[in-house]
Amino acid sequence: MKVSHQRMLCARCCSVSLVRSASRSGRSHLGGLLDWSPMPDDDEQTRGDGAGGFDDNGELDRLDDEDDREGTTATPDEVIALILDESQAIPFHDLPALSSADNETAGNLLSMWPRISAARRREVLATLQRQAEDDSALDYDRVHLTALQDPDTATRILAVRGLWEQEREDVMRLLVTTLRSDVEASVRAEAATILGQYVVSMEFGMLPEDASEFLCEALRDSVEDGGEEDEVRARSLEALGAASDEWVAEMIAEHYESGTARLRLASIRAMGRNASDDWLPILIYNFDDDDSETRAAAAIAAGQLLLDTAVEPLALLAEGDDDDEVQLAAVHALGEIAGEAAEAVLTRLLNAEPWLADAARHALAEARLIALDDAEDDDEDERE
Picture 1 (cartoon, rainbow, N blue to C red):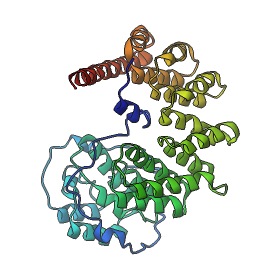
Picture 2 (cartoon, rainbow, N blue to C red):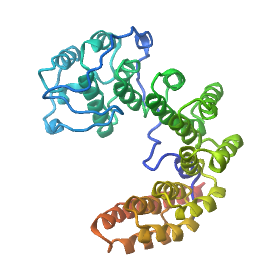
Picture 3 (tube, rainbow, N blue to C red):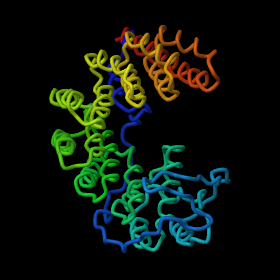
Picture 4 (cartoon, rainbow, N blue to C red):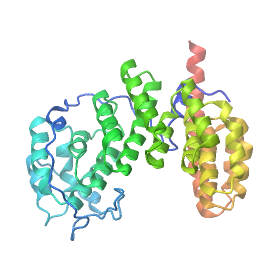
């Protein structure tokens, strides 16, 4: 199966596609958001009715059903006032007024942010992220930048996570600062993950050379920092995996051979992002690992290499592994590889248990879409 150069680059992303459209135009300059005034400590972790629940990692415990409301219009100041009124639910249908915030709105956000409880701040950011995932035209980056130095750990995690589609160099440098200096390892780890997006952009030639060097140096320093938490080092290694530099491959191999358990797992994930055929034998070897998380990671990584020779070993995992998550990972990987052999396996799985058949159905649709895209690429090549 012929694999396009662009598709191989995209395979360096995580299992869910991390490469979105190039940069969105019309963003405002960061302006006053770079000048942060510290907020008072706020240890409140929960709040009463009307707020969503979030754990200390910024994960959403409960989602409201407000996304079913009819859209209405409001000014940014009105939306900010509604957010401040914690007796009311988050004004889901009015939040788009904060998209592409101008300097005045950004200043108002900065001034009001410390007056909101931690739980409410978390809920606002998580809701904005849900909206932005559903509508790519929404740009809430300045709201997330407002919260980068929030005293609440989970809020900072959400703020970092909300910048995952950003490609601006100045935002990348802010995230590097977070990676290097945030007091909480969980926030530093999240920053490393989001910086992985920039590594992919770098491979597409979308970052200047000096910015690329700055980015790689920061991630490399993080991986090599023996005093850093393993989770942060591991996320940094996974992020770097998408880089094609020889020293990155050497670093991946080193931590696979002699790293801690977490860094070894990260090296396996990085192999997939690295998109080198040479990693496939190692990944297939790990299909038999005793640890199910390792087997699942190896399956996903093998799928990212887009090699037909991985189909048969992945089929064995998808049809015979004793762990549901490993089977799902293998099915997803087969959908990524696509091609006749992968489609044949996925078609067989349509007769499996309902949960596995449903996953196979989605993967089969993805595989057929990829095949269509590849055929169109071939037609374009012939015309050229």
